[in-house]
Image (cartoon, rainbow, N blue to C red; front, side):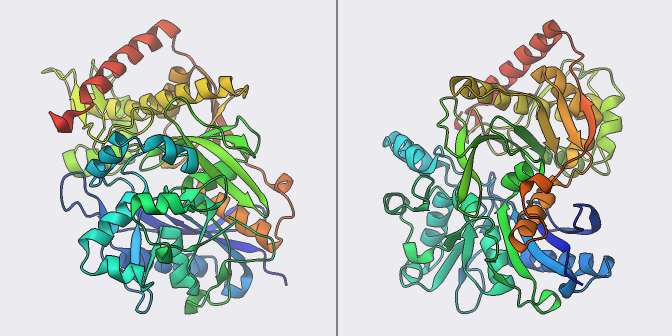
Length: 499
């Protein structure tokens, strides 16, 4: 019998998951494990790469066992991952030289300020599609090389390997040093027009070329990234690879230019498909690679919200006002409004459209009557407010390019929250569409792997059935009042770290 199942590895910021899908795109089995978050200094965030590999390999084996399948039943393996997070390891031993620097980390903010002051942002944006920010991998790589003994010399000799998390997993699964175009495009070292590592960017960020992986399409029919040699999964081709937001866009069947999706994860990430040509934003958004299947590369406009679902984790782990993340919906719904409270969760700065690494979190409007429920509701609303700001910027770029925006497709863990999605529909004054399968990131990875291995012949066979559509109910005047208070909260949080 021909293998027809797909295994998707979904390596996220706070947990590693593995999901088995059948040929209809239905979830057959799923396993998940959280891993340790390290905060060695304010605004620094690190992961242990070996713990990432350990948790990811464990859940992969667990999911396969739950499905009662063997590697021979799996047609292909897809990888999707937290992007920008930076790992450097020894090519001989396979051991990391230090903890991974996570995408949320702000330690290179001063380096970014110097590059911006030197007038380098137009060049960087022209080549990479990205703005200068500590978010991306380039300054993280340079920091690790400069702050780890002998690392820079060893990198120049070709003894070390850099990778985003997809590369780290591919290395451990197959022994190959590879990445895909969507992840390469997030390093700020990749030229999205020439589809190559860019010598001028490498020199600017002081990154040795010998450190870098080979860049491949996200999926190529008949040409996998490699075959797994990790014994419990041995023989499965690693067939599809793309960053988590690209996979979510793919899993939402957002294949037409102008289609927008929002993923409510640790952060919130909004992407608009712009087709086969990159669109330069005039509204502080990013131009990035969506995916490449075969020879065809497609692009997207992106806005990144650094703290989305992470604000709910903070309510649980930092404030202790909920026992688990699921409690926030009922707590937030227990009050009719926030009581005038605005919560700007700029814990690690603000992403699009402000791009302020020196912003910090603020809770405004607190009175003696403020309760945990008001703060919880304001925290949930903060996700919708931040996403609305990005959508507004996206709409301005789309209008200039004569691309029309329609409905907003949503996914991610927080998309299960009806209150959040209704508030989102009210703020953007447009329908919000939730699919039946919220695991669209993993589904996108599985679909890429399935297209590469012949489980599906074309994207026309892929479908994302709808669960519910949320339509606006709040009057425009009430929306305007909400947005005025939110804008003032954002203004007060900006540049706080520099006061």
